[in-house]
Length: 400
Ligand code: PMP
Ligand code: GLN
Image 1 (cartoon, protein in one colour):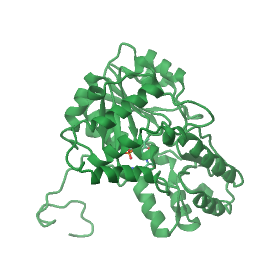
Image 2 (image 1 turned 180 degrees about the horizontal axis):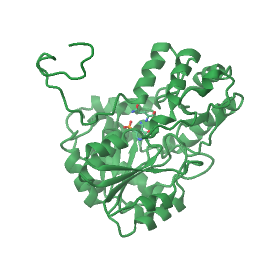
Image 3 (image 1 turned 45 degrees about the horizontal axis):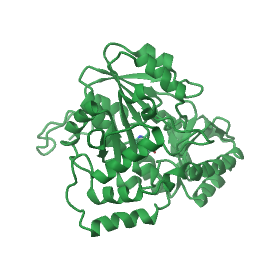
């Protein structure tokens, strides 16, 4: 093929048809890109969000016991009953909502699959779906793959908190979905009860389904509660609420999560789920069900991560990075405009690449969470790391 050619024909490529991309503007996710770069450069990886410490060995033992006990064939399509019952019991205790585990809870292959399945099942081509920007990178491609139109509504530019008036102004008769994320990746902001009340009023009488991504539900700091969509009856009645065991139990690689929705929405969700993954791996579900009998691991998660947040913020406060607030999640955003190095003027993605290659600390550019180019000199660090890892990063960042 000539070097200047931009098109290939089947004969150029040895008979392989040239695909027409469903996602022509999408490349590899920033999280994979930065983790690969961090590894190649032997940098401290504060980019992609995952712990660098192991999970509780009691959880591993519970899963091993399930495997050794012969739980190795397909489970029921919606998930192992004991796990769905444990999820329902937890929701009743924490959020005061009674869910029918048989009709309203489905175990999924992580939150990513739950969100995509909800969108595919509940949104029609031509519908409009609102995302609140900045937002997690899977939402927009999910909406596009469903053939729907993405409507981007900005979070408040100063506080990165939801602005209900802006959401209300974006609603049209074609609006069918709204994706909410609290605690919020990347900003670390959390929804308050008033935000949900305001949203309930704005959506009253509409057909809008809320997809509430609550994967960081157990990482909320400074004594604030997590305000789940499930705790607000008018919102819960129109929501698919998604969570992930990966975040809560330090097992991001297991890819097990769940979706909760009223039976009428869940029936449609399951029609797509059964022809997508069909079921989620059995021994993990038995292991998780047994482990959930003890609430301590999720009850203590906020204080565990709050201590890390506080130590990391105290260290960053001694550098030239400017800290943004962090009310929840395991992400800390900073502004690098005040650094003493000339690279402080680089665009965010180029700055992150430089930081990884030359300083040895990987981070994520906030521009990755926006649709059109935004440059605010802001990056995201993940502090779900051992204290030694955070110390090593802080030592390098302190030199800038
Ligand atoms: N939503 C948000 C906001 C996330 O940060 C993540 C990160 N992993 C996910 C969804 C996906 O979760 P899972 O790994 O369970 O698919
Ligand atoms: N949610 C994680 C983050 O925000 C990454 C998950 C992924 O790599 N897809 O860093």
